[in-house]
Length: 548
Image 1: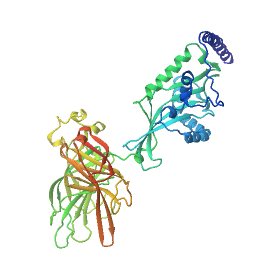
Image 2 (image 1 turned 135 degrees about the vertical axis):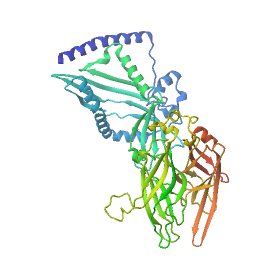
Image 3 (image 1 turned 135 degrees about the horizontal axis):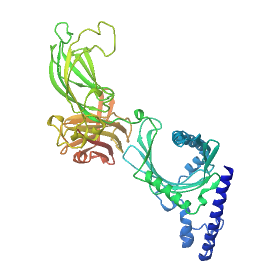
Image 4 (image 1 turned 120 degrees about the vertical axis):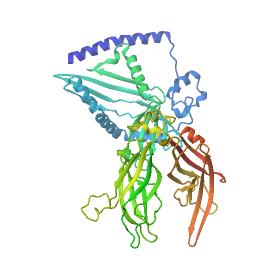
């Protein structure tokens, strides 16, 4: 194999060098060389750009940092210093990640081509770190950090990939890598778990420029005429095809269970019909039963039926609609209590319904035996008959999420509500209102702001943030509606309250009334609204309309 490497090297050298000499001679003959006359030690050469002659300026422009030509890009000398000092450690960490990521691919090719081994013999990014010419940060109402970089890297990496078959070994070496690119980086979503974002999304804003040297068995492959330009253009095109915006590369950082706040994917329609043979809890009467309904893992307060006085076989026929975030893990919890005017309410029994047992859009009638608890116990008190409860239950996914579930009808898969049955809640949906925060809210007497959401007579409010003009709430409120709120308004007010011994005062810091027609049409808005009756106050809201 040494002889083969020597031959490849001789061929590359013998062809590449003469062609280079001829081209250099022709350029020297037909093009008069231009003397830039730039000496950094000469005070004239350090003059402002407008005083340099046009020919010299044209040659200088590609070398100027982006923050010089575009003032919206910021200098990041501190970041370059940080990267430079950390580069030896980043080199080892990145190379370790590359080896781990490539391990499966190399093993696949080893088996496909029946090689003895295929592995990195040497893997190093070299001693020269990349240089960031400038950075541009964008403001966004979304829960993300959004910026663009001007990146250049004239590196001296040494990467040798060795393939062994029997006693033969073939090596491919990558050297002298040069990259010029403008990546866009988005850290999203911002979450309250370190490192405070769950994924990194990368895309290229322009076609990258890539240059490198490639040696096979020690011979310079790029010295072969025509191959150099072909390979450079091919790699640049492939990189652009994969990652040129709007194509993106998403790198997960946090596990989804920790990172993402799950959003509702459908509505659970529950109709509590009746109960039979309930326990008698009152000493002088029977029982005063009511049912409490909730979904596991949900922070929304439980829903309750009316109380049926002195009745062991109550009939309710009351309907509830609960928003579902994960039908594969959530369960419907039903708890029956005996209402008491004074003191704690007595437990009559409970039961659970795993949502994964339900088929989307299919109404099911269930008759469930009531238990003291869902724990397996040999206690005779737990096995005592407690009666039964009957209910109707239907899971209806939102149209935009319906493709995630099996068994959905064709009209849902097509995104159309015109073919939906009348009893399938066609036109109904969920209005999600998220009070993200407020800016520059100021009261005359105190600043303990909280937001109040008022819609169709239903009032909901966030927590109060003490002594803060720029509060952050990030609280979500849900309104299940029978029809789209195309002609409705929602009223949101920022208030401040102060509590003291024997007194309580409340002060309005501004309000806003929002027409929901745009929300219904677009499905979602994320805006900052100026507060009425506030000098500079704004409130940041995200409002979504999800159709079922």
